[in-house]
Image 1 (cartoon, one colour):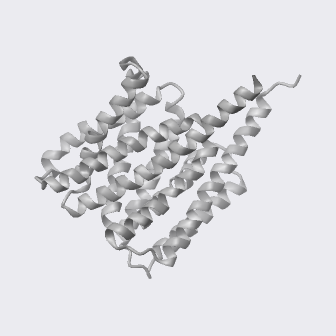
Image 2 (cartoon, one colour; image 1 turned 90 degrees about the vertical axis):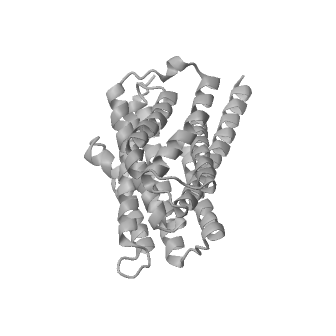
Image 3 (tube, helix red, strand yellow; image 1 turned 45 degrees about the vertical axis):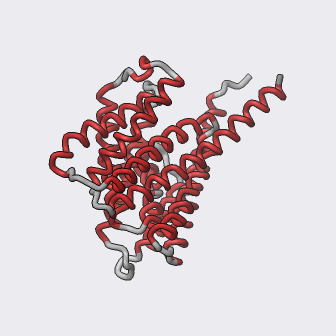
Length: 305
């Protein structure tokens, strides 16, 4: 029985890792396609709307295959409204950063979200943050400074600022999800976020929407499908421990760099590579420390025999 359980756990870890790698590749593909669509004339509000619209069928198919429509009933509607509002704002800013920055740089700065999540957990959740995690925060910001090179970079300052604000928004979403997942089904969280993107995007489309070529619409359609697939694969990866699968998220930076080189002729500078490496090390170390802390809390909660 013990061998069977060990084999089952190993299978979950292996499949979780594969799903996480797939989600990172899917999100990198989405980013590249949406940047291509922006060069065809689509703006950030349009990208949010079409990304949500075209990802919704993929999400709904996945939900109906695994669960029933009853699983989509929200237990805390107002919490969903807050999560969706913050998530849509962050998504719009992320897409605007993609428009303004090279793909690799925008992706690298986007991965400062775990750094900001640490800061928000300290400020909002009143969690204890030790010297190790504060050191990781400082290291991550050094990485951002190397990528952005204030005063000596060809990157537009506005694009860097928007990318950082988007990362703060994503950190806020992460902090919110910690509470939301205690009472809400994961399928409901993913589904209602996609629906909110369609509804809010539909409201702003009369002001920002334009007619585009079939080629542009085909590109954004593929980007929406890639984004929906990425969400599902990320959710499926959680069958394995978060601390095991999180390191594979940073392969997305590698994939984005490759897409930037192949599709936009953006050869990453040494500053981008070095800064992205520091951001990745900062995020990985933060994830490792949080995993260690969770294990310690779990061990302390077990009563002595």
